[in-house]
Image (cartoon, rainbow over all chains, first blue to last red; front, top):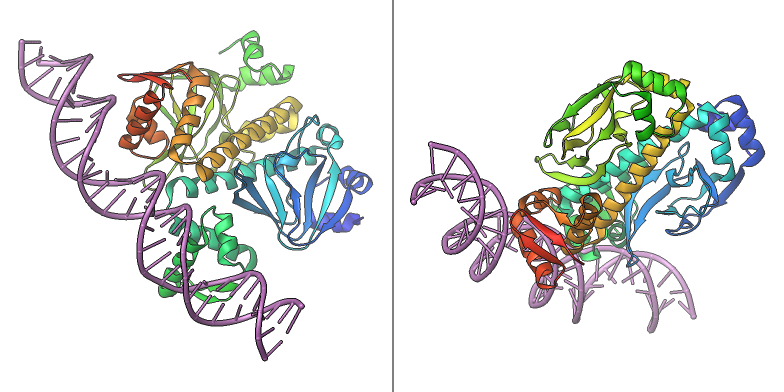
Length: 209
Length: 209
DNA sequence: CCAGCAGTGTGATAAATATCACCTTATTTA
DNA sequence: TAAATAAGGTGATATTTATCACACTGCTGG
């Protein structure tokens, strides 16, 4: 388990008792890049707080398609797992580790309890929901109003902010995240290359705009 | 202002002190059907709790387009206005009264204070964010994965759940909400009529599926 | 009562995106 | 090192959605 000092670094706004509670009740878990952490429809058994690495959150279509919504970084939590009533809550999102990650798993029976006991936990939950709500608003804005070329640009910029100017994704992976086809992405990237916005390599490209 | 008894009917889960605080600090406002209550980019000055009537929440595109996200009903609050830090928060949504409405306006300087003082307020804020987050997930699912015919059906069903089987909207209004054109909606509704799903009239139709 | 307008119907066409086919090139593996 | 595999390029075509043009109809205000 992490020490209190470690926890303070990652979750600086918690109160003393909450750090103790986390140390006592949470389990520190690891997962390899590529692991699916949460599927749609799956019962939620524990809250997920990111300690290290990056998680990608998706909406999953009935047909099996995936639609990228936002990243989760250290110090952040997966909103849907912070359930207040712990009876048969089912996940409405798909969560995947895209780097090797470490996270705290907290059995959901503590969610209600901690809300009562720790003010800083309450604030954390509100901040989490608020920021995720705002991410979803951005995603809706892109999806509802923009064509694929602009959506792709927005998508790339989010990648760049996360991981720097070298985007290490195949055209197919990007197409999956945007729920379109590989050909569409290939052609749009080719246009960007012609415009001098990117420099393409196999399995990656550099954002230069 | 409303009496405590009225408040209890609409917001049953608040604690005693919170009802008092609302009576003391909130202003009961009215607005006519069609009024814009909140524009994107506008500074948020007060929280909005719906007392009577229905509000529609939209995402607004840069080009001026509107995209319907969800309804707000009595007992519910506009999530974006429940801001914790009251420095220059700007609205990221568009809110319109679609019936005559009554709502409580609470100056946002009380948001932080009430979070500290009233546990039931804290829970209310969390419930609000959680349910709105879930609405957005549904909206994203429709937008990202479905064609216009299915999206229209989903949209109509939400209307029907709100207002009953007679949908009193023009094709143009529906087109605006779904960020498409009137012709597209006209043609799709015509198909639904041919399938026997709806009965069309001028300015309205009946859902019979 | 009729002129004008909002609401609706519908064909023609354009634009965006999806799908299919097939090719080339780089990388991995037997 | 040859063969298999993954990544990417590109034309042809189909589907979905957007846009334009114009007709029709029922309602409303002078």
